[in-house]
Amino acid sequence: MRTVTVIGAGMAGCEAAWAAAQAGIPVTLCEMKPQKFSPAHHSPDFAELVCSNSLKASRIDSAAGLLKEEMRRLGSLLVPCAEECAVEAGGALAVDRHAFSRCVTEKIRSHPLITVREGEVTEIPAGDVIIATGPLTSDALHAPIAALTGKSLYFYDAAAPIVTGESISMERAFYASRYDKGTADYLNCPMTKEEYLAFYDALIHAESAPLHDFEQEGLRVYEGCMPVEVLAKRGEDAIRYGMMKPVGLHDPHTGLRPYAVVQLRRENREGTLWNLVGFQTNLRWGEQKRVFSMIPGLEHAEFVRYGVMHRNSFLDSPKLLDPTYALRKEPRIRFAGQMTGVEGYMESAGSGILAGLNTVRAVRGEEPLVLPRETMLGALTAYITDPYTENLQPMGANMGILPMLDGKFRGKDGKQRKYQAYADRALAALDAVIGAGRES
Image (cartoon, rainbow, N blue to C red; front, side, top):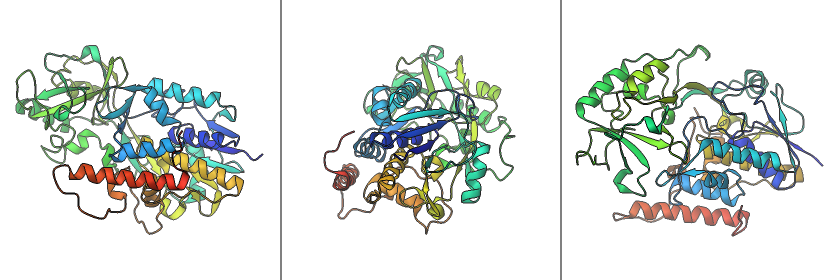
């Protein structure tokens, strides 16, 4: 029987391997950890979350929630693992990142049709291959990929700091979710105008870490993961209208709406670790300690991880890939994950499912699975593989990429009804393709 080789045991690679193995196709999953780590990875486990621990909204009538439901119906491994390892995060699905990675690793390693091969891959193997090595593909493998595809694109990505829960001062911080939606799962650190202006001045004048390991080309930062200090330099109110917006929150200590707020989200179920939401950064570690300790409630914060910045690479997918994630000029090779131009954890994982399922169909000589544009995964795939797209920028799940609906949705709940209609249409279209009622 033909086997499939999957390179990379991140979110996309694990989903691709699982999809193929669940369909009865033997899989060799190649992963360079623990023999070698990228600059952003530290755990030997699979599906390591290197930035936020949030997988975004859970509601079906949201883009992120719809995406996860589509993945579930396509047989996702990661969605049930995430739900098993969830931590409180209001209406979002956030996970204990270590428990999540362990859960995925255990299921992959225990699957009878998946063989894990540790060690760095330095050339593209023969046969049916799915390359899911992510935006930090090692230099040794990047060379043959570049030779096959041409020059790749890149942008820079950043991660937020994490602090211990016991080091946060509750004399200023308070639990709440915006507009009191869901449970009060976020810790909020409020600022007065004077505190904000002092913090802002320190932030924009803080020293950044050098990018010695990166290509010496113009720095391009993806908007979705822009370092807080870069965004702050756009104007005094840029971050106050961004990750520090105070709307929907009232400080119980004063009864007033703060001038600005820093929110923290749980990193684990116990609440012993919290990350600074939206505070991805490339400041020097000493500067992070100095500046972020100016945040009320974090004066004595213990930082267990400082923010880091790294280069992310992705392909010129519109010119290279077809809607099954296959390389047009050599269709035995498929790509999956962030390197294709999808942005986000679950978006990457979803592309892995489609790459895995389409590799299975190719092995069996069956028609490919191309999802309707009305589905979130179908729309994402269409976006990154549209040959008419110029200057591809990474794209995450959002309702704006779906075909427009007929009719108007007026009233104060019009937007919610519209998004629910998008979700209903998407799931009906998906079921029509894969079979109504199919479950993972």
